[in-house]
Length: 430
Ligand code: NAD
Image (cartoon, rainbow, N blue to C red; front, side):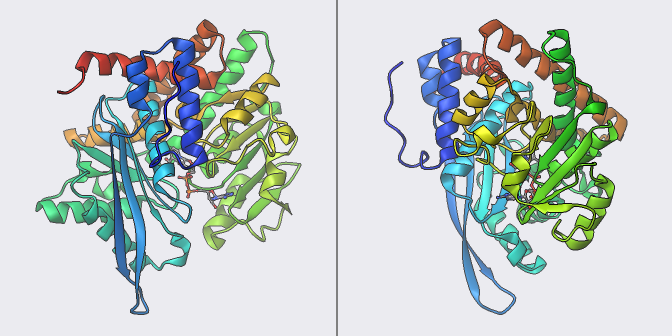
């Protein structure tokens, strides 16, 4: 395969470089049409905006914001809005690419997009966050819409931010448009089970992995005798920890931005959650020992769920990782090099685009329920989620066997198979 010039605009972050590297690996293994690969290496459209905000003290601060659509071949763009101090165009573009792959992998009629603002939201008041969110929405309004591109929460944002985005968009259009975002609060058209969906999915696929390893006579694990560590106790990590605990798995460590807590006898996840709700950090939690985030990753546990941020398992610390199964709750937590090393050493990695797809699946349910104005109960949501996750897991595991690869490459192959067929059928405009 010819090697292309790197894009100067998008290619500046390790996350983007890793995403392209992974895509090229999958393309090689599946013998992908080179024109399709060429197109998928770059996003379709990107917008960079400056967002001036009047702060509570009367001063004006300006923030950088982005919305990137990687592909809209299969349907409207879909992807979260991240508020984090490290956000940049390259990272957002990489995350948009992962969204394309994720939506295609699980068979949704949606493309891939992502957005973000370079800001530490913990430093802003509620009023400042609202002003920031509303002005950002207005700046990117030409790009978003229920048939065009549908944002959702991501790191540093939640249902409240989605409610402000929905209201701002609706004000501009002159009528309520709930379909412009997902991850909304229930009162304005959100779906039951959406907040828990990603964390639940992360654990569903661990169960499937345990079953598969047993069937293949590779290992005979049982959730009840396993230990786990969860990196990042946020919207994804906290639910994953809870779902592991209710299945009898011993969750021995969890962490947030400020550090980790460890108890070798198992943490009481509900108690940890209550402490987090009250103190907004795990720091100072009494019934555990304080350790660093690096120490958490290196613990001798059976299951590791990196659910904070990208690029946490790299060449620098891959040799310390002892977990037997890793379910990627976060997007891109393991670099390509570390993934290859760990897989060669017998670690079973369930890749992000499969493991954390629960969120976008229930976002899709929310969008469908909103369009039909017909809402499902939580049991229906969870059953449909479990069904789609199981089907996706089996397709990926099937491709892993067929192509003799790890799950990461197999997941990309599975999604690119569907996407490239759609691209070739639609053809190139003009
Ligand atoms: P969140 O903001 O709710 O939680 C993030 C957690 O990670 C927090 O506990 C935070 O303190 C911690 N954290 C942040 N930076 C860290 C660092 N450098 N080291 C250690 N901990 C750090 O975000 P979330 O929605 O749970 O998202 C977490 C990851 O999951 C992201 O990669 C996101 O893209 C991905 N994801 C989220 C969803 C979703 O539905 N929310 C869906 C798919 C993927």
